Length: 99
Image (cartoon, rainbow, N blue to C red; front, side, top):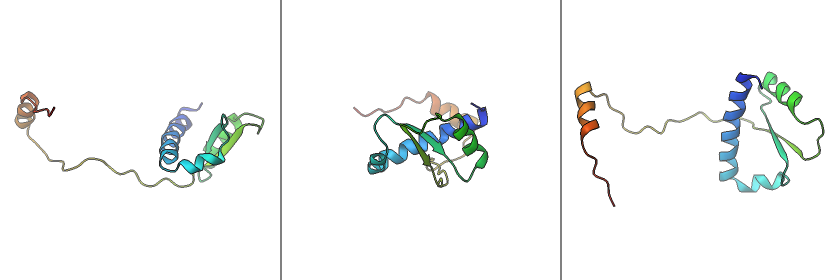
């Protein structure tokens, strides 16, 4: 698979898996054992590539247009700039682990 499209497919696969976890009813439209081909109709090149590499029969193949991806949000909370010395001190400080 083209490496650029492989990266895109990997991202879409992760996001679609998250979607199915949050919306399990959607999977009712997908027959058990079916091969799911993820498409992005807003990206014609990717969609053409995926259609070209998809199984040639539509039997047991489901095409899913992923629609739109929401912006990625950072999970970082309360970042702060520290000096090298402060970083060294925190790296050598024993951590208090709760049992």
